[in-house]
Amino acid sequence: MKRTLTLAALLACTAVSFAADNAKTAISKAYTQFDFYVVKGSLKDLESFLNRTSTNDFTMKQMGQTFDKKAVIAQMKQQLSMGKVNESKTKVKSIVINGSTATVMTSGSFKMTMKGKNQDKAHVFAGQSETKDTWVKEGRVWKMKSIESVSDKMTMDGKPINPGGGN
Image: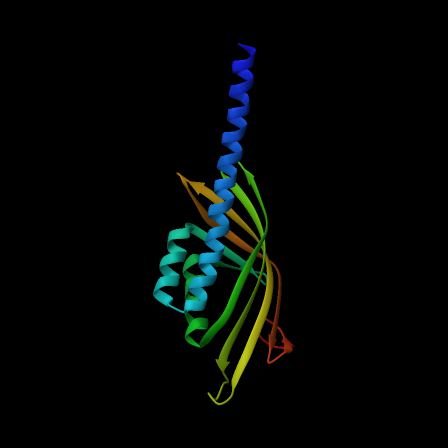
């Protein structure tokens, strides 16, 4: 009897660990897919991806402002319509799962080519960011609930600029 209970306890721990590993894999994969869609530049595909992988009440907090899902999608559409993203890389630094909530720390970088105000010279924008993201489990699926920017740095043609506009 003792051996059966011990075996059952070990199997339960293994199942919990396996579920956590599957959640971490699914969440990590979403960041890789996001990078793919950003570089691909298809606004339709990116919007569809974001709608599938985030909650209806998704928010993003950046530079003291909070944006809802609709505003985030509108910003992405505007930014992607102004230039070409040459590179987008997101590194998942950690994933901590507590029940049906996961906290994900990321670091990311991007490079984008955009025309200047007068559509004359192309400029290369590069950025680095760190975020604290919250994911929640809805049914059997993990979805992003929020992104909170921890740090943002940006350059234009190699020179530092203020990511919030103005220099």
